[in-house]
Length: 339
Image (tube, rainbow, N blue to C red; front, side):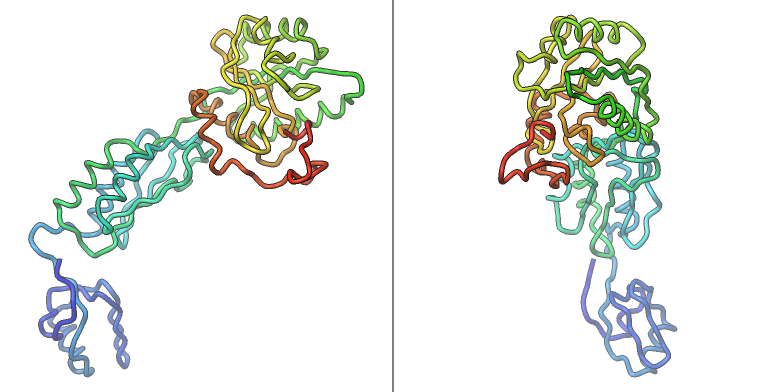
């Protein structure tokens, strides 16, 4: 594409690179300069114009953006018609956003003329939400450059994992001094978390904070129609040998990982019994404010695997806002209930 300042008569057949206002005449940027337009500009005293002229092998900004967006769009992601060199990508269903970060970085590194921006990976998404946008900077790019971008973008770099688990079983352990109202409020908070994704609590069990008793209930839930199990401990998990992880193992399950580089949310545990995921909730999960529990809960509801490496990669960006209910700020000490 040729770009630069030329005499008005030489701009015929090119695009006006910038808007021009002279007298009552307004020439918007991107407008094709016709013979009539050129003559009107000359009559208005305009001698030169910054113009963009396509060359053989160029692809217009809209077509380039549209092709790139289609290359990026995977399962449950739709592509919006392009405008001014931009094509947006939208979620077709609620779920969790999955992104091939290497593909996005690779595309953006090809040339400054092509850009793509996305929402954060693993973000909970509602149907219709915009999850990414492709923008071509100039009015056109060489087709060979577009093909390089498409190659680096790969296939389906953006996709939505729809929510698949709907039935959640909850076990709350009890110790002397823990008021039933605390558990009731915890269940109400969880219900509000689950409502937007179409899931609900189908089992609500309350047992003493003892490994043997807890193990029986966990085994029972795992053997039923529950698809995800959440354990709210009367006391936060302090070690892999503590009550909740011990109960998971006694129930025939395994502890995948304990501990999380997200604050609040450090004391979260992820395990499985009979192929069904189990979350040992940190104390901060009793709060409606976003914390590490939300990040793991949404992934598992969308049947997105959560391995140790996935959890340990959450440290960058894992320092969340201070929770008002925390008795002491982090600088002065940590509350077991909120970890």
